[in-house]
Image (cartoon, rainbow, N blue to C red; front, side, top):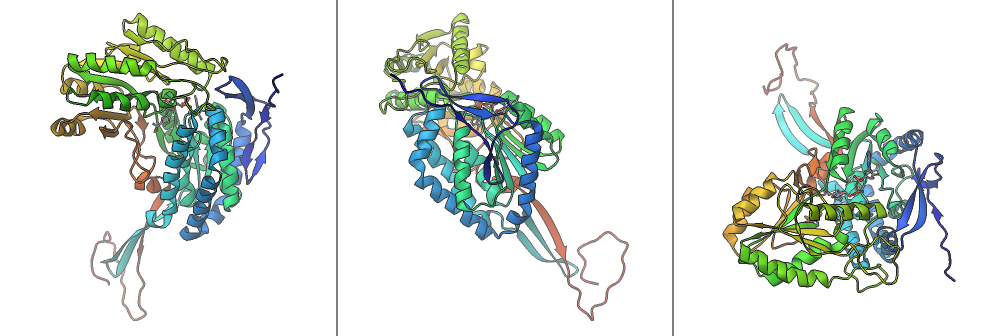
Length: 508
Ligand code: NAD
């Protein structure tokens, strides 16, 4: 007889402790591999969010006064705890997201790059100093933390994206409120305990669970100074517009439609191998997943599709408990239904179905949200599957006759997150880098996600606002700059009144 698993009742993490929700509203958290509800996550009311914000505000003055070195020590300890607990954290990520262990390990490793960058907080927040800018005056610019800041995260990277959004924010001295995706809240609560164990003062780190209602309070509350959002483009646009209308600093990263240009001189066997992992890994639930290939020339297209078909048909989908699977299920039944709908629509619109993944055979766990890999050929602009992000394993091939045509198609697309070219021709690669209107660009690199010390972010409708994830600009996003002009007048020095506008004259 099967042992019935107990559904866990999750809480918020406020002021250093787990706190039960009081709204009476909750959302189901699933194990996508089995389709079972594993937890209920409380959905906070505006009042609960307000209370959490007040606690975060109260913690701010103490944390911001700690030296950069002391703050870095806490972040360093947090990093150590993540690595010490990596096996348990992997299990948590896999259970609530359905991704494979290998993939989850990669996510943690990349997330730690953001933590590493944050450990360098002292260097990242150094100011500028100029002596004798005029009248015996020295001037300096210094970075100060903003106060209470918030991060709102998507489901597809339960640890990496929250770490990328929050590590630097914490390190520079802010109090940080994370609103994780209600689909994967367990990982966020797990890392909350690690922050506490690392010695972060109570109230500096908060996890508030919820949906639109909780987010609305974060966007409208005067105490919240900045919002870092990662999620789908329509929500990103809404967050950016509303957050900025409440005079907050906002960066909102949205979805992607990321193409791989396949040139006639590319090694098609190697290119197909690169395509497979980048396109179908994590069941294609990555903002940087390759959405499709744009093949240049008929012969390239025919050969590439033939090679791909054979490889795609062999991909194995299944639960993370099976080490031999290539990718797992999608996040919910609702998501699976939406992907099937997108595939049906593409068939109706005349795309050629090369591999059909709508009914995968999964022997052990049929109730999970599984989809096999789908591949379309002869997709053209205007078809919904070309224009829209499909957040699941349905990928496409678009045929063009020249590199210029490929570049134009990509540049005309409304999204501009990631892109790559596979070629052996340096001149083609250079033209592509120069002309392409996309934020993260690869040359023979299938998923060109920048390392933590370079900026991360798309262009066009893949990103709203001027901020970034990762990189040196992130320290700037989470701080405000004050420029101070300073003069010390000697006792015997003569001064006079001037009604003229201050200029760079000698001291008087
Ligand atoms: P989503 O937009 O549905 O949700 C993201 C967050 O916003 C969640 O915390 C959710 O609770 C909240 N939210 C949802 N609807 C809201 C609303 N109407 N008002 C306020 N808050 C709302 O995204 P998702 O499905 O969780 O994640 C997948 C999407 O995220 C994909 O489009 C993917 O491309 C994108 N993504 C982008 C990046 C990037 O770096 N550009 C990284 C990861 C994921």
